[in-house]
Length: 278
Image 1 (cartoon, helix red, strand yellow):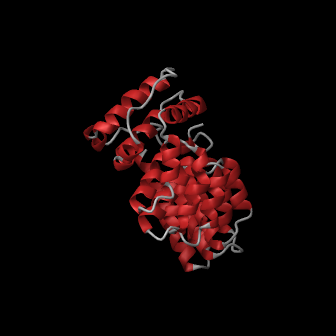
Image 2: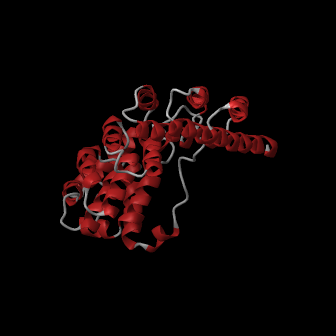
Image 3: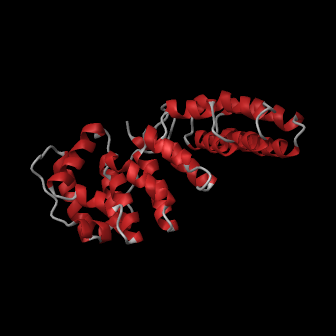
């Protein structure tokens, strides 16, 4: 399953995005693209004629190309394994892993980017350490990379650092990293109010229509903290499913908390506008 689409099938985000123009300007990225296509076509002797230093210097276009290649329909787990084997044959795997602990912060961030793009699951714990890096760009790269790698351990590392990561940034990473089972567990037993807010917002970002009913329940339940109820209203608006219209309308009319009432009213109006536009 594509890690960018860990949901119930309702997610409408395309599996493949058009490569940005910067990719075409990189000679190293061009070499990577050609060899990646060869390896994914089944050529097990393919070797990438590039050094780790070259990949790290062009990490953004190279990582984007790898992500696009592995996002193609039908690539799946076997494709991930093929790319990792390509990196091993090319003597790049260990060098990229070692670059995660480089003394240069730009190198650490670049290594996190590339390890995540290549689905190098061995890097999860090392990238998790970068969540506490003294340099903000490295921490940001670590959050994005763990979201891209996904899996239970990546989710645990992200949520363990929830107090240090901006709420919306964490929600975006969680929406990518978490499985349905992870989301259910986090909604059932959030570790904190902040964790509950992040999880609810992640449900919205995943466009998860199966969460509409639970989110309405949270929005109406006054035992939940105000911030969580407001986040549930926002998530319902983001999902955009008409099943939430009635519940949000009632909340907007009768909830005694003016903040929740306003959030519900805004979410309700947004859903109604979408319904009319269709």
